[in-house]
Image 1 (tube, rainbow, N blue to C red):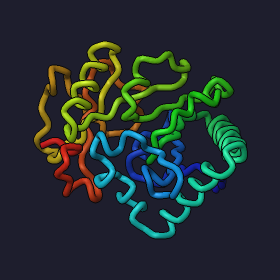
Image 2 (image 1 turned 90 degrees about the vertical axis):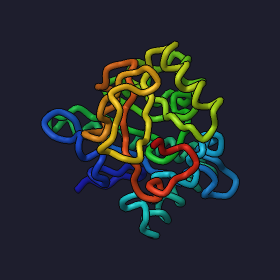
Image 3 (image 1 turned 120 degrees about the vertical axis):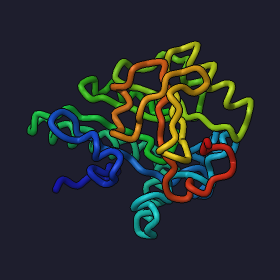
Image 4 (image 1 turned 45 degrees about the vertical axis):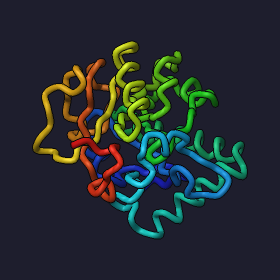
Length: 233
């Protein structure tokens, strides 16, 4: 088994669904929002109302040893940014080589439980043969020119009416998609806010989705009890 500094591979049910004959997915999990003193990796968490309902608690994320590892990585990001980025690029190199040997296409999600603007560090540009993707609550990113190999899906929330309107407007303006977390997976509408809905739970390969859609996700972990508006329904 290949070991990585920062990445997880086949570590959760969602990203593993996209693995198979064509793609293999690596994901980086850090400590979200204000879990670590002196740094906030999810600056929109309070506005979007997702801090309490964060998927940080879902799956293996509920275990203390897993959370401790994510905290250590976040402390490295806070205390030694250059070393963090060096280790990150080492992981990308190693993962891409692993995929090449198996005739798989590498897909990397850098923000598994964070919302960092990694495009500012030239990472995607350094690895043009790797597909990167993320979810984000930073609506301003939808209007920016991103690297060709970086795909962003906006994350919707009704915890804040102004934020919800901004996300829906960005989808209309840019053609990007927005992910919506629904409470009841058996009662998903065909359209939401005027946009067609597709099933986002069958895999995590968001860069393959048709543009201008709502990506339906389902509440997991503590999110099942969310009453903020982050979970819809």
